[in-house]
Image (cartoon, rainbow, N blue to C red; front, side, top):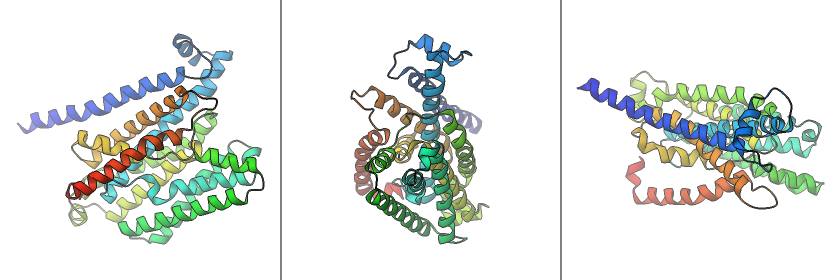
Length: 342
């Protein structure tokens, strides 16, 4: 009997990620077909594997393909990080920005824009942003010590995020060139346009390292639902778990911000939507949230290209418009049913 139940649970557990992976593939294909230049779908997929450098092949391979890949990668990083942080903090309102990595990565990019390094090389911006994320990791662990509590992590993260936000505001305020200030503001709004495969190869190693750390934390996150003392009695190290989740989130989200700008609410919305489908188990939620984040960000990136207007709608603005009402509904739900989230 137990074997039959376990087999059913395994089938149910596979149905969700397989379904989400199928949706990711469909949205990835749709992303390749969307753009200012209309190209029939059949030509898009022929150009995707074309060896010659025809105009259609250049558009598909050098412009649309990197954008679609980054949409999937950044969305997966945000969704996975949000699920891991919510499991660690045992709070449905937690999201990757809470540890200050996003703001610190954005500050690194602003430094590259402010001092003109981005004008020298397009890759200077993501390099500086990843550097800002790494500095944030070092400062965070220096502030919280070797055996940090959840409250210490939150307070240190909020302090780093506030400091980075203040320094970004100073850079915008003191910028001698209005065009540079406008470029900073536009980058902060988030976008995947005008990205290349160089951005993909630069961010991917950091994202992959972050994903590996977060997925390794899955068993400990499941045990943590029983309480820290119980998880420790089962052989899981709580300080190691916190280091894996915080470090993995910093690497994955920092690299994502480096190539896309600030994109919010993905890490908050996706885990909450998918949690009921995985039996509220944090370990099973991690891969599902990675795929769900890719789905949501790819869908949003397709959406910004379908909104009419002279300039393309910014991706971070669209996710904020969609995520803010959901966040308010979640806050009201937490107030109405406080015991359900403990």
